[in-house]
Length: 106
Ligand code: FES
Image 1 (cartoon, helix red, strand yellow):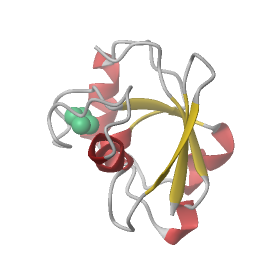
Image 2: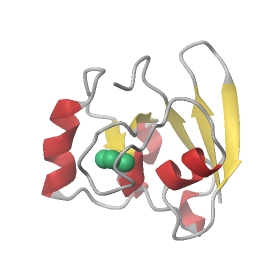
Image 3: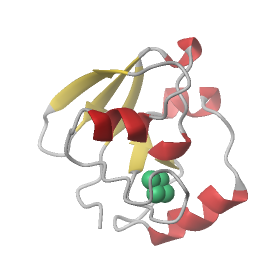
């Protein structure tokens, strides 16, 4: 499946992600800017924050309480569309997912 990243400067990147791989892992493996993933997906860093396009929100895997708690620690103020991209595990259903990157990630 593919995920498209929209940057605050208007740049757009599309990544191919393996099924079962998180958006954070794909972003860091491809060395794209904006998603740091400092903790490697352990829900302890909040440097993988993204804003999911609203039409995709309901189709994402559910949020664990740890993710909800960590969203308080993102460097850019979270919104109802905020998710930690290490928790967005790709599947065929998510092909075409669109997320926006925050302006800051630390
Ligand atoms: Fe650390 Fe997502 S990579 S919380």
